[in-house]
Image (cartoon, rainbow, N blue to C red):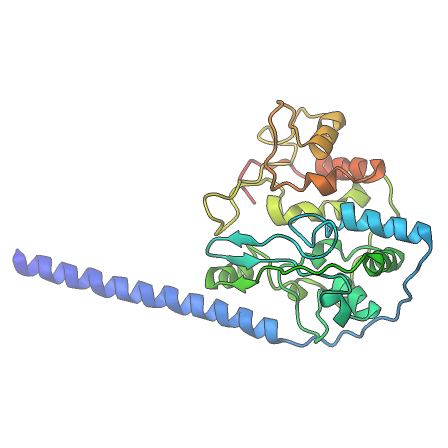
Amino acid sequence: MKRWIQRTLIGVGVVAVLLGGGVGSYVYALSSAYDDSMSKVYDVPVPKIERSTDPAVLARGKHLAEAVSGCAVRDCHGADLGGGKQLDIGPIGTFTAPNITSAGVGAAYSDGELARIIRHGLKRDGRSVRFMPAHEVNWLPESDIVALVSHIRAMPAVNRPIGRIEIKTLGKVLDRRDQFPIDIARRISHDKVELAPPPSPTAAYGRFIGRLCLGCHGRKLSGGPIPGAPPSMPIPTNITSHETGLKGWTFEDFERLLTQGIRKNGTKVDKMMPTEALGKLDDTEKRALWAHLQSVPPVAFGNR
C-alpha cells in the first residue's frame, strides 16, 4: 500500500511538472509573439496634412477630443492633454497616457505623425502604440483627423510629471489571446481603414460610435469581468437589449445614463465609465449609439 501511494505521488508529480512545463511554454510563446509584434516597423507613410486655425474646425476638434475620441478624459491624456492618471491594472500592467502638448511628446511629432498615430496606431518610429485605442476611433474622416490635430496643437503647453507604462507577462498573453488589446497596430487593417458614413442618428453610424464601448463591455457588448483584471476593478455591465442588459430601457433612460451616470433603476454607475466624455456626445451621436445597441443581438451577461 505504501509503495502504491509513493508511485501515485510520483505519477502526480510528473504530470504536474509536464503540465507546468506546457503552460510555461504556452506563456513564453505568446509573450515572445507579443514582443516580436511590438518590434515590427510598419511601412505606413506619414500623411501630409495642414492644421487649421479656423474657429469652427477647432470647435470640432475640441468636441472630438472631449467626447468622441475620449482623449481628453482623466483616464486618458487628461482635460488639458498634459497626461492622464496612472492606471494600475494588477497583473496586466500599469498604463499612463502621456503628455501630448508641446511641452510633452507632442513636441516630437509632426502634424502628419499625429494624424498617423490616430489613424494607424503607429509611433514616430513606425512601431505600434501600447493601449491607445486608435482602432476604436480611426474611422474618423480626414477632416475630423485634421480638426483633432488642430485642437491638440492649439492647447497650451503643460509641464508635469507623468506615470509609467509597464506591460507584465499576463498583459502580453491576454493581448495575444485578443482578450485585452495592448498591441494596437496589429488590430488595424492599414491598407484599408474603414471610415464611418456622415453623422446621422442611425445604427449604421452608431456602429462606429459603439467601438468606444468594446474595450470594456467586450466584442458582444454583454459585459462581464475583464480577463486578468484585479478583483477591485468594477465589472462592466451588459449593454445589449437582453433582459440582463438594457431590455425595457428607453432612449431617455439611456441618455440619463450617459449624461448623469444614473441607471434606469436609479443606481449610479462606477466612475470607471467615462461619463465625462459620453455625456458630451451630441444628440445625433447619442441617438446613433442607442440605435446601434438596439440593433445588436441580445446576449446574456458575461459572454464577452
